[in-house]
Amino acid sequence: MALPPKLYQFLVGVFASLGSVLFGYDLGVIAEVVGSDSFKSEFNHPDDNQTGLVVSLFTAGAFVGAFFGGPCGDRLGRRWTIIIGSIVFCLGGGLQTGAQTIKYLWAGRFCAGIGVGLETMIVPLYQAELAHPSIRGAITSLQQFMLGIGALAASWISYGTFIGYPSTDNRQWRVSLGIQLVPAVILGCLIMFFPESPRWLIDNGRPEKGRAVLAQLHAHGNENDPWVLAEYEQIQETITYEHEHEAKSYKELIVSKSASRRLLLAMALQASVQMTGVSAIQYYSVDIYGQIGIKPQDSLKYQAINSIIALIAQALCMAFIDKFGRRWPLIWGNLGNCVTFIIATALLAQFPPSAKAQGPHWGFIIVTWIYNFSFSATCGPLSWIIPAEIFDTRTRAKGVSIATMTSFAFNTMIGQVTPIALKHVRWRYYILFVVCNLTNAIFFWATLPETRKIPLEEMNEFFDRAPLFVPGTEVTKVYQSGDLERRAEGIEHEKGGVEHEEKI
Image (tube, rainbow, N blue to C red):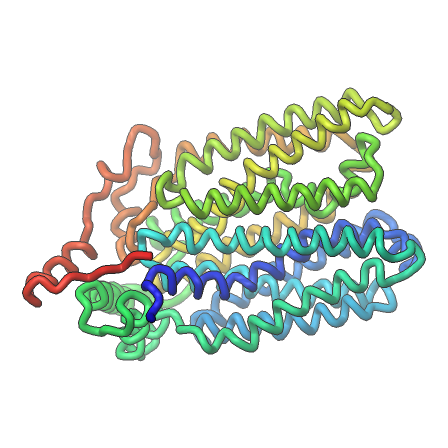
């Protein structure tokens, strides 16, 4: 029995998201690694700058990987880019696990980061190009959901190795680092059994293969299905126009007013997510909890519980994002983050580690959990969903590449600055995140239009019509094309009422 088309698309998206598991696992494991006594002893008690480099060189490598992901995705295809990312990540993972000196470890972190940069840039783009518009949000939100799976696995694995091995045993952190190779090997070995992006195939002179993949995705292989023919026709027309009127270069993203606006939104979104404070908490949870007097072992346990909460929130986002849209969840999510950081900042300021009261400790833990729920249900998934869907075929890989580079640039900065800030300015550091969450909400309220359920080939026209100052307008008032639906209905009528069914 053949799988329903949307379920098939979803499962392809799930497998591709193993690339996100790699990033999520690193987010979850690194706090335990740098907080382990055996790690500190092995590398002669690294100072704050050296510890910061363990974190930030990974994200610096991801910045480089995201940069090469754009041209690699355009030239070699989405699947080969995923394979290359997996191979590079495995090389870096092996270097980290067997590191004998801190420089050896830094090299492994940078190399693994390149692999993750390739994966996290190309995976949501690949998912968006495979998905039906009605479930595109759910499928691209898998990036954050599977990132959460990776973080959850890392949190409990690293907690187990932290308490399961003596503080003098290097397996306390080497085992948890080595396990990250498993999903990378599986992804790299099996991705070629899944379809290439039909839009990439059509854009690169293989239209018949592209139509066959569309049929495989949407109609159990029936190339005469009305929706398949309508989408194929629309993609062909759009790509032909792009080939005739636009150069396939980064210049398009700057010269075109519509494209430059989308690039700015994608970059701002990825930067804003890092400035919500999420990376500081994930990378340095032991130090952050320690600021209010919570012991390292307990910190890792509470962070592991935090990962479960994040996964629940990401699942809710995946279930409802195509119903509620992108714009307002992002705005309310940032406002929720702001409130939780106000409370957390007040607790840190009033109750230093010397305070023995359990009430403030639990207050801080619960507020951190609430923050993580707010972030994981809104800002986190949307930072991958929106950039993957707003560009056209000719600029999508490059636009997503630059947006992802922005994310890792800010991630690198946070990774390097946080341990120094925690030591020297302490609780005042959190005021930065209070301000940034508030300004994020205001910025996206003013500039981000709603893109829910708009076909990828219609994004150019949509952004041409959407006002620069968005409040007071709704997507239905700004844009009412429905071109893809009308094409499918016309083909159905020509074929004597043959209907297209695509449901889970």
